[in-house]
Image (cartoon, rainbow, N blue to C red; front, side, top):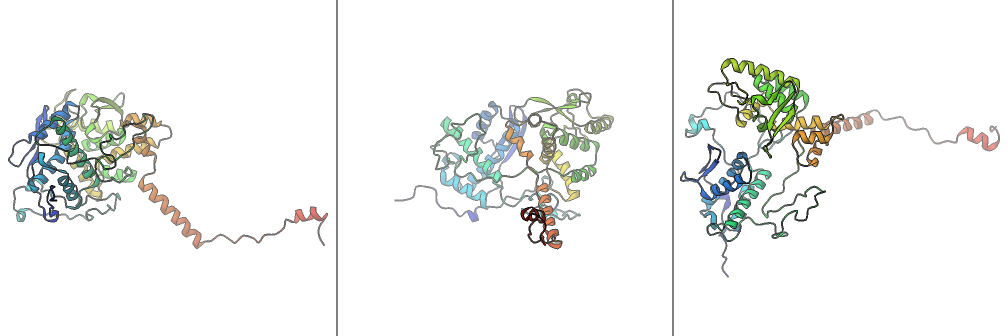
Length: 431
């Protein structure tokens, strides 16, 4: 009987075109569009985004989902399959392609459209580890040439949810979700009989969803944080790092603060939480407010907008624009380059979490509320020793073993009877 599925493809030679793009509209009603190869909107994605936005998903979620859906659409263009004609063999090939293929090399926006010979190489050559190798300063692996397991898992979940949405609407020619659930589970809903007194179990729901390795949170050691802080160029950057490492706020949460949110008298700063979008005040150190005041006085003299409802963080040059996450990440990346490190802005949150969780005078419940965790088990991760502490303890153990080998303890005396016990036994000293 003839095979009615998709033909076997030579994925080794498959070229996925770099067509289409994710477009930020600036419109709060439709924050992002996924544009096709003809420049028009991909309407099935637009409908899915409206449903996500109505369910309370923020614009950052739409951006993340849009990147995954655009990657899937580019793969469909490469294999010449319409989105509503995709079958499970196509999803299987997509999962295999993401696992084995190299990521496309992104061209910097300044060099797009230029001839490669016209692009000047940087004058300063930094010692950059090979892709995937651990960084010599932080111990964290550098970005590899392949898609990470978390990226592949997120993409599989997003595309599977996209097809579930359109199957419910009976859109197009869809008959089945090309991204099925695991064979052992069928249509079983994960955690269907979950006991609310227990934590949710991590269950693989997608057949092509990879296993995600458990990674311990990475904190920045105090001496390295001091070196990064000393390499910052402005009071704004110093204030940002001081607030991140003191309050434990996420990078984008701190950037949402308004000028009225910084209360020096109460020593708190207000942020908009990532998940709930609720306003919450977080404690911060006095040093953070000192650096903030120095930055504000200098910025206001230059003409930065001033007002209670104005953003707290601005760019350093005209035209004045509110500081966004990408500019803040670039700032921290420049500070990292001075040390040859690859820490991220989220590592500052991990650093604050480790400091608070390991303070014996601070309850873990308070730490949970400050960090905005849903489950206490998430906060308990920061009670585990950090990687640098584990390595230091292991090296100390090896040093003690070597010291014992070089200076062994004296041999114990041979066993003998206690003279006092013998006197008692025989009624006096033996002659």
